[in-house]
Image 1: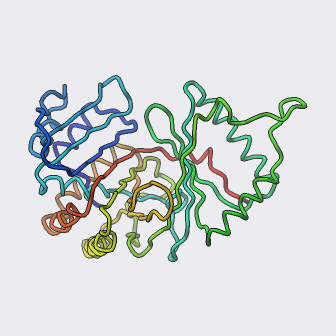
Image 2 (image 1 turned 45 degrees about the vertical axis):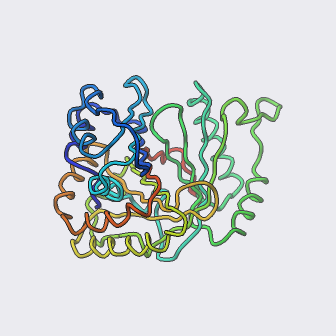
Image 3 (image 1 turned 45 degrees about the horizontal axis):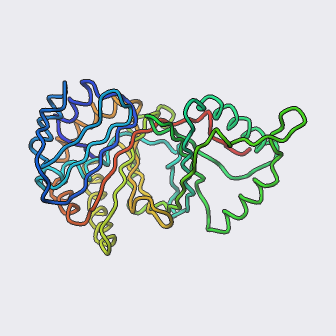
Length: 330
């Protein structure tokens, strides 16, 4: 496991930040004006953390499920604790979307932004489509999770692709799947249900991932996933990868029992690096994270600090695995 942040941040989240789509965005641009973190209500731990770390903090209203904190400038040593330390805890099981083999494989990642009030209809139609895929002998797996918050966004991952030609093969199989029929009329499954799509191509990086021999929790118990999306400055990817390899060696030396799965963006506007980890739930995530934060110590913080000059933005996303919406071919 890799630590997430400070004890103040942990306390703040456990205090009353909802288990929703909680996104942190760090833009390391100096010169911003200061806004006191004490203006954030009922979050003394988070306020204390931000006061020491930031020149500016903006938090959306507590009525909104989607929360964003933007920090500009700030003390680099403190931000280092948050930046890569967000690559955090728990076993993300091999049955999940981020499961990786010992060889690099492509992933197609699709984000489905659902129209307001259409979540239930979407899930019903998606499950019906899965049944038609099974009838049509589609051989490509799909793993699904939902980004927590509003508006609802589902993420579908087609993993373990050998090459781009595999996408053509999947498209051909999907084109042969029987259409949705309402009575005697072919229906449009997505119009009015899905507002829009986004997609990206990623490649797994087993050489950067950390997979312990003994995992803290069984794969089947993983429900909660945190992604840390790292956007690098131009020309810094090789250096960032070299630093993270040192981190992976550090995890191994400390005999960490929580996997870290890493993917690299190859097409699309997604992050350069994505670190995915899981837990039973959010409470499990933060409890274990607090413990490991102390265990890793200054050696990890020094490596994390080296990432700061290479990074232009970091985003944190919570999501829930939806195995009931996934498709596993026979």
